[in-house]
Length: 387
Image (tube, rainbow, N blue to C red; front, side, top):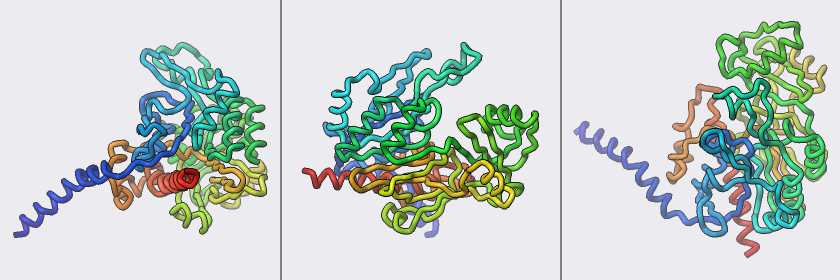
């Protein structure tokens, strides 16, 4: 009797993904026209816009012609090919009228990443160049023009780290900041599981080299901590216990926004972030990063004019619609095979390692997915009102 019960449970569990797939297949599609810009596509994983496409696919959003969004085709930016060949598809060779037409024909644009592709990454097998140069990347004048046109037409604009950093020209960065009332401090940061150079291949070597050069070759760090880098090249290291009460930063969301977007009021954030501020009186800071420094860490931050708490999400929902994510929000290692299964959210605890603080799938399931699903849902509702 007991064996029959176990067998039935096993069969139900086995068939559950099949039923989830069947139900997903019959969910009606929803039309939202999204311009996706990703200039940092180094391989076929499309990591920098992968999470966005997962959600578009999962929620069955389609383009104006009714076709689904394809992760390897439906974006502007860098298109990798075979044998180190590549194509570039962007707005730079378009006329102002063509850019205006694209803005008019679409509902929203999302700049997921503009860091670009560099020679030491693209040509690494042949080691063609000793010093890495930027092959392609950076926010351009035509990119800002597109956002200007979208803003003027009250279309939704979403942008995120690292469009304000290297290799974006200063003049273009300044135009973007003026357009949306933002200001970059020039500082970026990231949590590191261990600062021991002999025990962490993920620790960026350029960070170690720069810090040693600035500190007489010294590198005494062994525990977990944070790296902070300024666009001038200055590097600061904050180590657990020495300068940090908690090594990993926190992301806090105010109560009103947490309810609106179905977000947790607090979650850890283990990846790249930037320190920005807003001076627009109409903009709202709905989420903030917090660096958990102790007294020693507070003194270092103060000496370098770095705030301990700073915006993670800035939104504007008055005369135009705009979101700025001050982190690598769209870069998560999501598994596409689950995007066509209905009812995944109640099972999200199975999708990440709750013990591993560096597992970015946690951030995707607990924060990015509900955030973007709500933003897209609101956009879809606005589209229905127009029609």
